[in-house]
Image 1 (cartoon, rainbow, N blue to C red):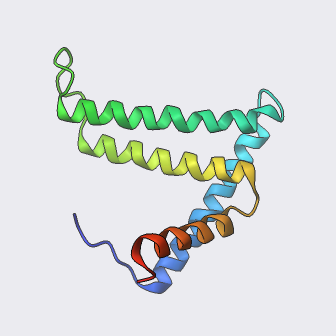
Image 2 (cartoon, rainbow, N blue to C red):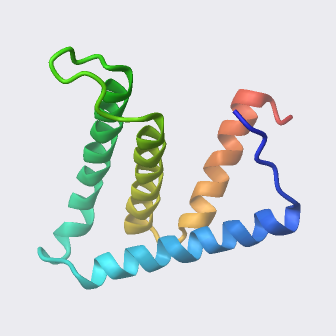
Image 3 (cartoon, rainbow, N blue to C red):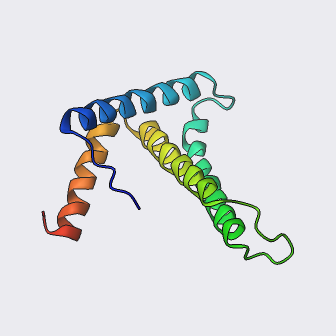
Length: 118
């Protein structure tokens, strides 16, 4: 694994773009709802679908299905994991417009619990 650290300025710009992109994806989905208000909550099911695709890619990358052999690469796994992250953030945005703040607070709690604030 490579060290992917960036300057604080670049990290802040990337973070700002992330939340702008998540809001844009949420708005696009909101504008194109087929089921009205219920669809926002049903979108949470999309997260399970994406996690299943990660599992399928790992099975394919490791060749665990002898009938199919190796059907995926580790790049495919990375791509599917990115889909999970994006889907989770859009799902969170579906529940609250304060997505960035909710996520940041939760990440701080996990960091404190796991790393002791280091």
